[in-house]
Length: 88
Length: 273
Image (cartoon, rainbow over all chains, first blue to last red; front, side):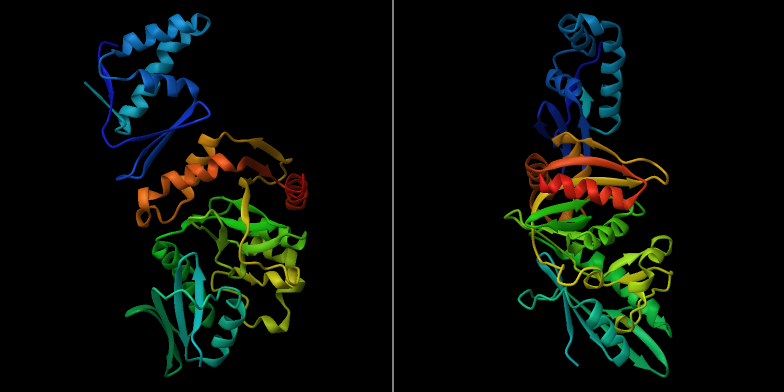
């Protein structure tokens, strides 16, 4: 939660109706995220920690606060495994 | 003997065949694939000698043996991959392509999802046939396809048994047991060259299941399309922008079906509205 996720270089972002596609042309890796994922991606700037992102989303969606931490960490882990983010 | 030209998108291959009966069979089954204006990028030759058949792509020997069925199987397989790889302008998807009037339908399924079986039922139900395997999308957004015969696996070929055994088909069974079905035998005059994409379907067959169609978001459709794109490395921007544009402009559904005629009726209704 104290680490700072930053989008990896080379990934292209395409926003379609609130959802996102992350595409890496060199490796042909493509990932799809729903609206929540789109929001998380936009918050990954290398300045905010994962904990900051969780707190921001919990403040915005208090009714889902319990699930947000788990969801954010899952998404970040998936992106990290696919090389879409790196820790700053 | 006149070489055969086979085209898909902006790629073409030339086939020379020394064996007369095999040439007639290939000429019959590949007659919808010709496009003489595209320069060939691959050359296939079927040579004969001492009772053997040899299939070459350029200088590479693909087959040596006595089975004409095996020559056709290897040729169709290799040709499909070669044409897809050599398209530089068109996006090439592993998909079946059909049309209802001007409205094009892409069936983007994995192998075994029933694309060819659905294509046969759709043509019998009044759709035009473009391809059961490779759909090419031009930079202008027009879809075309590799208009080879429909290749039916043994499990679904029995449905069309009476059409498969017509004597003018020549060799219609491949070495792996798959059958070649001429779309013109399902519905004369129903092979066409182009259509405009109107519907993206991602089908999967599930025996005994009722029809279940679910709309897909544009992002999901684009994600699936990129996984069906065969020539990303040959395209500008790896085809991503064009695939996204196609997904944005075209309605998309996932489709689980257990009964092909019911699926055809649903698709006809959707494309007629």
